[in-house]
Length: 584
Ligand code: ARG
Image: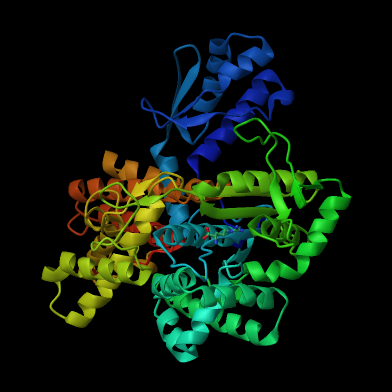
């Protein structure tokens, strides 16, 4: 018995892939059963298979001959309406309407909407967000936060076990001046400033004194020594500073509706106690060596511009540890103590070299193996409308809470005319504003540079959050007018009388593949693109096919298709961390 909770795939590409594999094995022999069916969307049919080309070489036959044989077998399958060979050996395949309709009905009836759980659940550590205590959390951190949150939601929904790691920067020499400044302004005043997110103001003031006042600079240096040697009063002050700043982060996380909590904090200082041992282990393995007084590792293949081998620095010549050492400790801890099968680092693309080197050294040490995979999911820069690094209208660096406020205010302008009740309007504006901001980060390839332009992100047309939310709201209003609850619609039968209905139903069947695609390389934009295609197919359907005015049984079928579209949109947006207002 298969587990009904596990879900069944409705993915046409998977189903066609299996059919092609079976046909190939029947024609060429069982040795070919594992051949890649190479199914792709096609301009000439629903899909095409390019398998015959590579099989021809392997089997030493003409690609067209193989394609003909496979196409004949495919055409006999119930799911397939037609399979025709074109060119040197492509097979163009169209699915049978009945089959699509049957799959869509099954998807509607499935609590998991045709998305099976992972057959081999993994334990995955996702490292994301990771702002710094001494610096303002900026739009770059917003992006790693939002992308990481979507990756986490998708992995968990597929049944993987996720450990969220917020690798906050809470350690380093800059804490000397921050702590002395905290003493100068007083604990209460510091708290008020930091918890309100005025971190840059606080830092700038400290830095100014450090530069102008030699006595302050001297105090700051002594404070670093006290911090590193574990002086209790200094540690208490440091904890205050860290805690105050974390207060601010958690308000941001709550406003954004991201899943990070205090329990997910895995700050740099967490690894302090492990650093000496990590260095010892790497040294005894011969992976790390002393160079100019510092303990370094030289991973093979990494060279500086002048061709000399490039190191990561594990322990500086003065005995101090830095970012490299902490990340080596983190990787060992995650593999060895947390037992992770996979590590995903959702971090800015400017740190690509850092992670490539850390991973390379971890492989040399045997911490990363064939069984434990580590990926850096690089995040591109967020630019302002002028193409430069994002700034506020007044030109300053952007406080995240103000950016969120602005998105909500502008969303309220967009929907102003539709709602008289200010309370309701504000609630909807919140969902729309935050959804637009997040969708902006999620809809573009995560490593691309992207322009944060609130006007574009809030548009009701195009590939935007509000467009998708609006499609869902429209479906709800159809059900509202009919006095029906869309959640109660659990079965069709779905019939596909028109091209628009067929196109929408076929799209919806691809949900599972889109969700799965997110996990391959930690790319939420794959799911966003799918949802946008669904919403576009729905728009065409909505323009061409009357729902409530249609005669039964067409009305029934179209309502079922609407209900399925709504559930896929709401579930999919939910996996991206985006809420859908009841009305819009
Ligand atoms: N705090 C760092 C920054 O703001 C990001 C940390 C990323 N995670 C890590 N394990 N290094 O750039």
